[in-house]
Image (cartoon, rainbow over all chains, first blue to last red; front, side):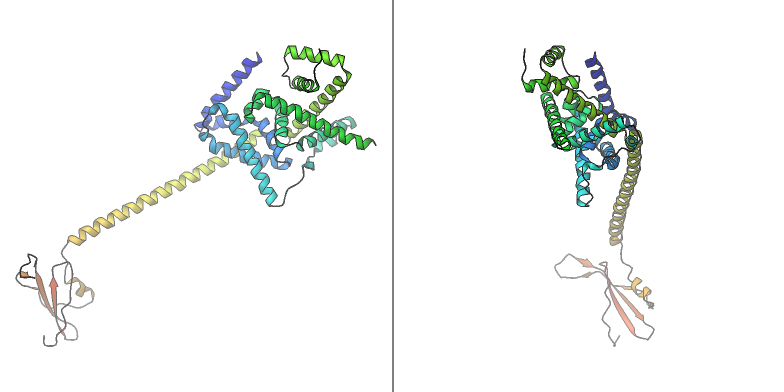
Length: 193
Length: 184
């Protein structure tokens, strides 16, 4: 049943891709909105400043609008989109580095969380720790983990986005989790002693 | 049935991501029930998974709504497109105009070059008046054996200072002033 829904969803997106290639603005908008969460997660994984994520995303949107007619294979649009987003985000980071505005990933801050109770603060602290540990992962592991966390994407979808085999996705996720767990366990030990 | 540590981690990961099959799930359940260390690992990874997902949800909620960003991009693209069209239109208009200008100039040049030259024109423009009508001489052969024939006109006039001039006119689309001679 889920597979059928997934297939229908893919077919709908494929129709959007075909329409978008002909310059249909509505189709381009819908296509971007459908893929927004994982695109944003991908960008967050590369651009480490939350405040700049929206700027990068807008650049990506412009790039998609300009280049969608050059997409050769509509079936591989997710990989194309990911490749384009990754390139744009890396370009942005390089520009920032050249301008001397590079900031470590510790810049993440959630004002809303500070107003919550102690338990929520503790949980929030844990999110922070996990996210920081994830940010410290090598690119290929961070990417796959962020995509998985972004919107319950299936392994199939992640494999399509990253253009890698399904087993690779699975192995990378296992290793990413192991590395985060190791990192967080290492951190906790010194705090207790 | 026991499974190795790597397989255990893969099964846990698949369970967390809802990718586990019923058979794998049963195997995992049996392992977790039999091995407390496996259960501890499962709980730790599960906790990290939930924290990571919640953290990402918060990150995704931050910033402007997706629709705002996409529409802004579409608007900016629309502006750029209009500008590009306008630039292209202007460019093509300029090129067409330039080509037409060159064509007209060449055509005129060719047409004018075929017209006989009015030999009195240069003098009229300098304010010098001719006082005599052109005297057309008979056809002259340039070389004895040559078939080329040229008509030569002679113009005689007196300028404002009283000097008498004779102008030799060759019908070759050229105007040559005659050499001044006091005896004339």
